[in-house]
Image (cartoon, rainbow, N blue to C red; front, side):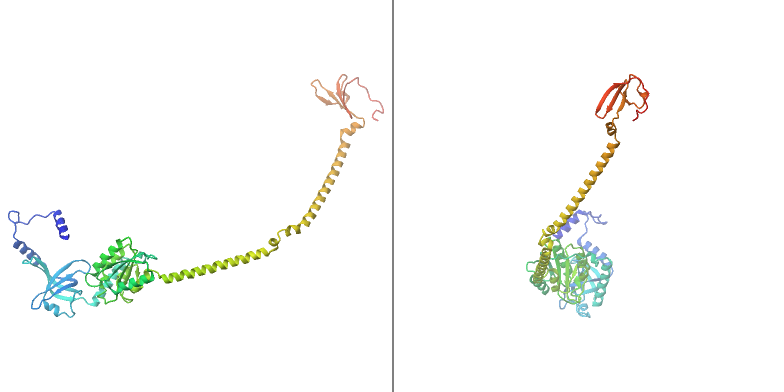
Length: 433
């Protein structure tokens, strides 16, 4: 499939103009093309290259050893040829998985149409150099903020499905699954077995991590591996793997090595577990402990409820023993005499006020009768009023008010009658009496 894609992609890209002397009518022979490629590659100088040895082929009696050098962070390999003496004279045994720095010159072999790197010097990368590079990468990732706690995702309290990335039939896989299922038997696993050391480990872990992160059923991912040397744990300090962990959506637990081991993926993961067993304890709760906690909480709740009920019953008993609730009518009975006394006082006060008011009314009525016109009329006096032409009445107070012929209205004690004024007469002596 890869070659088909490459061919299809090449056909879509425009090809530059053919060099001078090459045309459909006068094409170059294969030997000419191979010679020109050889001449072009020969112009390249020697270069220092770093990688991991993934394959070593040495045949007794031959003057050439064949190696495959692989990029630690990408799935790219390069064939290498060298003298067998470089392998046998190395101060450190060179095996598959050893990281090295080589000095070589690119070479093209026209007879086979192959390319390789002809190496003249091989230097194994020492432990100190590896640690220094890890520290430089660690400082770089920290400066970019990839270790920030604010980027850490929270683990689900009870995951339904756990994704596990680990070595096939490894102790780490056995520990994680056995401890997890013992703590919570209903949990499910989706396991991706990969290489956990060597040149291809980081790339395989990245592929497995992407697959589990894209699975909607996976709630949390555990990357687990047992202890080992710095070289064995080197894939878990790979920059590409660290960035893939940060970019993942699913929470990730790093359980690499033992307590002293600290690969870089521990710093970028959401949770760092000391061991695979510790990772299992962090991912799921212990069903036995949870049931014990439920029993404890149920007992505490029962005790609290019973204490509250007892306290409320005691309070109700105290309230019921109070006189006002023991005999509610007693308060009314005790107050009845007081109410009756107050009613008598009120009635007496009202009667006294009524008598005083009646006496006052009688006195006022007597004064009014004495001062009013009725009493005067009863003594023989009369009120004389003249009647004008328009029918209005005017009190006659002097004889000038009633000339002769004036119609008069005369009111006496027991009624009213009309009369007509006669001639004026001078009063006689003694009439006032």
